[in-house]
Amino acid sequence: MKKPLLLFLLCSACTTVVTNVNNTTNLSEFNVKQLSNYKVGETCAISVLSVGPFGNSSIIETAKTADIGKIIFVDTKTINNFVYKKHCLVVYGI
Image 1: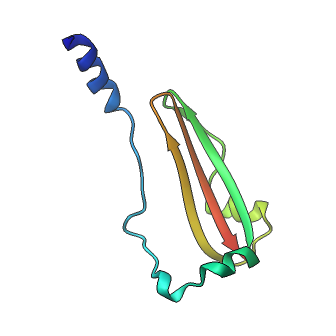
Image 2 (image 1 turned 30 degrees about the vertical axis):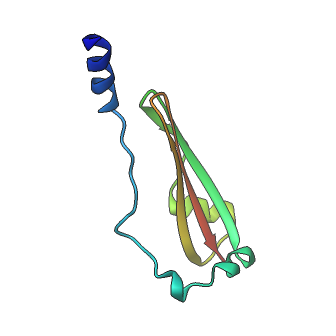
Image 3 (image 1 turned 45 degrees about the vertical axis):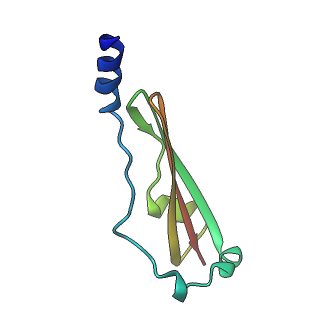
């Protein structure tokens, strides 16, 4: 029983989750209904067994894919488990 628990604890230390809790937006000054009027670009980077990332999820490349000239809002989506990590960047702009 101790060996599987030790293995689980050792392997769980290899995964990390990165969030932007310091970069917050005052949503009282932002009209969320306007998001449907903006162009949206999304790019993702994938890691398998902590090897990678494969793909490009930079703000500049994401804006280029959607032909965005002025960036208004940036958001992230992350799926993270032991084997697979997918980090997507979503850029809204005009």
